[in-house]
Length: 158
Image (cartoon, rainbow, N blue to C red; front, side, top):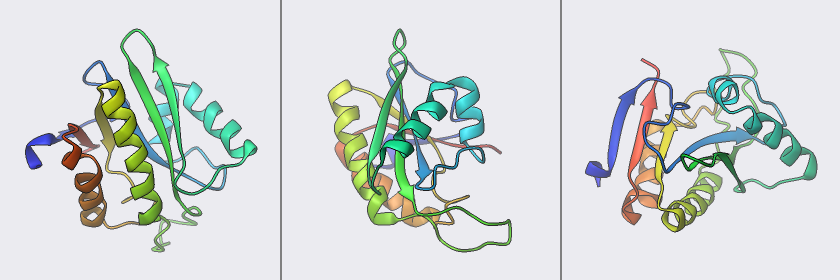
């Protein structure tokens, strides 16, 4: 399965291929403005506006919002609702990611990626502001995406 996952240094909001879905985790508080979403919303402003509208209309943990952000190059973004709350400060060590919700989200992403024939691109989701354990998150990614033969490009900033 590891041959389906590649690691990169850089900004995950910049697609490295056409026919890509960029996935990331959002919180259930209607807060957008820290972490990966800063670069994502600069590149694709619709992502922030769509998330805020989605928040106002009501959503549930484990839901996914799929957005087409570049029709010509077949670039999509998935806002995955898998974070319950937000980090209060840099000293806050609480785990806000919900692993069960992440599994549900990645199942939906898997179905969408297979149907649309997309590769998946993502930052190291859930291990920063979400407070999650990267090894646990990677196991879920492998279980939900790699087992379905979906290629994943995982980015870290440095």
